[in-house]
Length: 477
Image (tube, rainbow, N blue to C red; front, side, top):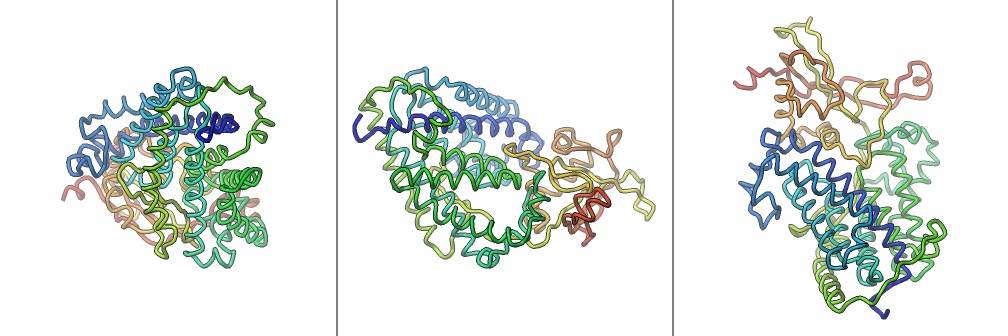
């Protein structure tokens, strides 16, 4: 089929596109389930206020043309339905141009959500999903072989994800260089998972091996993605194994899953066919118009790659940044610094008529962030709990929560139903609390001995008040 096509990668494309569609489903469902208290008209950071203040060209989104909560919900569920159709393989049974339009629609809908999501969507995996989704538009379907140029663009994206993360670690915290970061990371990461306690208690020698292996996976393997097969497949397997380890050790939304998805596209046909012995579809030579569109898209990505490539070489490397409003080529990275001590903001309420030493305070429990000491950290990823994640940042510094924490508290004082749906439990189901306060605690995993004796996963110590007690009356003043 000539230089343009790589028919040997049809199975890798199949898995890549179906897995990406699954991630899209999760992302749209998350948006539908959580937008109202976070971004709705009565939400903490309303979209309507945002689009009135920010021009379309700075943050392109269909919500600049029209916004209502009902319209947002329709967009999110339409996106989920479209993604589900892509999972089912609809794009492979329609003409090539229709397939491209389906993928383009999914990309445009999710970009529209991300670009008005503000702080709640300020995570690297949002831009990563948008950038990957744009490349999927040009992957073709069962009617044509995968374009070589797009396969290289996917590897270039995977390279930036992994190599960028590796560089920012070496340039950042000293513990990455002396191999001690994992003495702390499993305990202090934003959202521990069910196995994080066990990972934390692995021998320190093994933690050092983990860090060294991470450097190999993020600084060595990505370079080999551009080597001939089977070397590129070996590099892809290293990425997949490393990311799977991260899936087991914590909750990082769909970051690890989408990175694995990118790596799968680099596997040679024989590797995938041994696991999935499927018969190749009847592919034809790509039409001239498709070749032209792919070449144009490649040229665009190449031109936009200048900023991210320069950022990789910079001593002041930026982490998880977009260089243009369509987020077509971004820069990535994670954990340039490691928190040594875990702190948690615990929100408490009381129904006492006045603040006295006898007032009984009851805690609000979040769905995944640490709170109750006897509760094992749950598994939520790839589902993304936006409020729980930002509560971790709030504990690092009140400055990270200056926009949204007090509005959150005010909604809890009203027993706002959409807001309460973001939480695991409401300690005041009958009537709203009269006062709410927040306190900062230091959390650490219990030792194996403490765990056997008490059954607790966590131990905590009060550090300081985080928010003095407030009521609806005092907030109004």
